Length: 89
Image (cartoon, rainbow, N blue to C red):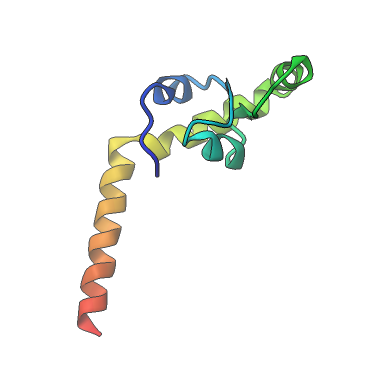
Protein backbone atom coordinates (compact mmCIF):
# COMPACT_ATOMS: atom_id res chain seq x y z
CA UNK A 1 0.00 0.00 0.00
CA UNK A 2 1.61 3.30 -1.02
CA UNK A 3 1.93 6.41 1.08
CA UNK A 4 -0.59 9.11 0.15
CA UNK A 5 -0.04 12.70 1.14
CA UNK A 6 -3.10 14.55 -0.13
CA UNK A 7 -5.42 11.86 -1.46
CA UNK A 8 -6.84 10.29 1.72
CA UNK A 9 -8.96 13.35 2.44
CA UNK A 10 -10.56 13.05 -0.98
CA UNK A 11 -11.20 9.33 -0.50
CA UNK A 12 -12.61 9.87 2.98
CA UNK A 13 -15.38 12.06 1.63
CA UNK A 14 -15.85 10.02 -1.54
CA UNK A 15 -14.40 12.50 -4.03
CA UNK A 16 -13.28 10.88 -7.29
CA UNK A 17 -9.73 11.79 -8.29
CA UNK A 18 -8.64 13.27 -11.63
CA UNK A 19 -4.86 13.28 -11.96
CA UNK A 20 -1.98 12.40 -14.26
CA UNK A 21 -0.47 8.93 -14.32
CA UNK A 22 2.77 10.21 -12.75
CA UNK A 23 2.00 9.85 -9.01
CA UNK A 24 2.78 6.48 -7.41
CA UNK A 25 -0.86 6.19 -6.43
CA UNK A 26 -2.12 6.42 -10.02
CA UNK A 27 -2.00 2.62 -10.16
CA UNK A 28 -4.42 2.38 -7.24
CA UNK A 29 -6.69 5.02 -8.72
CA UNK A 30 -6.90 2.94 -11.89
CA UNK A 31 -7.08 -0.49 -10.23
CA UNK A 32 -9.83 0.45 -7.80
CA UNK A 33 -11.62 2.82 -10.21
CA UNK A 34 -11.29 5.80 -7.87
CA UNK A 35 -11.23 8.34 -10.68
CA UNK A 36 -9.14 9.12 -13.74
CA UNK A 37 -5.35 8.77 -13.82
CA UNK A 38 -4.07 9.33 -17.34
CA UNK A 39 -1.12 11.04 -18.97
CA UNK A 40 -3.49 13.51 -20.61
CA UNK A 41 -7.13 13.57 -19.62
CA UNK A 42 -9.71 15.55 -21.54
CA UNK A 43 -13.32 16.68 -21.59
CA UNK A 44 -14.63 13.15 -22.22
CA UNK A 45 -12.70 11.85 -19.18
CA UNK A 46 -14.24 14.55 -17.01
CA UNK A 47 -17.63 13.72 -18.48
CA UNK A 48 -17.02 10.08 -17.54
CA UNK A 49 -16.35 11.04 -13.93
CA UNK A 50 -19.55 13.08 -13.83
CA UNK A 51 -21.65 10.47 -15.66
CA UNK A 52 -20.35 7.65 -13.48
CA UNK A 53 -19.96 9.67 -10.29
CA UNK A 54 -22.10 7.26 -8.27
CA UNK A 55 -19.73 4.37 -9.08
CA UNK A 56 -16.59 6.44 -8.44
CA UNK A 57 -17.93 7.80 -5.15
CA UNK A 58 -18.93 4.30 -4.01
CA UNK A 59 -15.47 2.97 -4.90
CA UNK A 60 -13.79 5.83 -2.99
CA UNK A 61 -15.96 5.19 0.05
CA UNK A 62 -15.06 1.47 -0.01
CA UNK A 63 -11.37 2.18 -0.56
CA UNK A 64 -11.10 4.65 2.30
CA UNK A 65 -11.20 1.75 4.77
CA UNK A 66 -7.86 0.57 3.36
CA UNK A 67 -6.35 3.86 4.56
CA UNK A 68 -7.71 3.65 8.10
CA UNK A 69 -5.57 3.09 11.17
CA UNK A 70 -7.66 0.03 11.99
CA UNK A 71 -6.85 -1.50 8.59
CA UNK A 72 -3.13 -0.77 9.06
CA UNK A 73 -3.17 -2.50 12.45
CA UNK A 74 -4.95 -5.51 10.92
CA UNK A 75 -2.31 -5.65 8.17
CA UNK A 76 0.53 -5.63 10.70
CA UNK A 77 -1.18 -8.32 12.80
CA UNK A 78 -1.69 -10.51 9.73
CA UNK A 79 1.98 -10.17 8.80
CA UNK A 80 2.95 -11.10 12.36
CA UNK A 81 0.61 -14.14 12.32
CA UNK A 82 2.13 -15.29 9.03
CA UNK A 83 5.64 -14.80 10.41
CA UNK A 84 4.80 -16.85 13.49
CA UNK A 85 3.16 -19.56 11.39
CA UNK A 86 6.24 -19.75 9.14
CA UNK A 87 8.44 -20.11 12.24
CA UNK A 88 6.45 -23.16 13.37
CA UNK A 89 7.09 -25.06 10.14
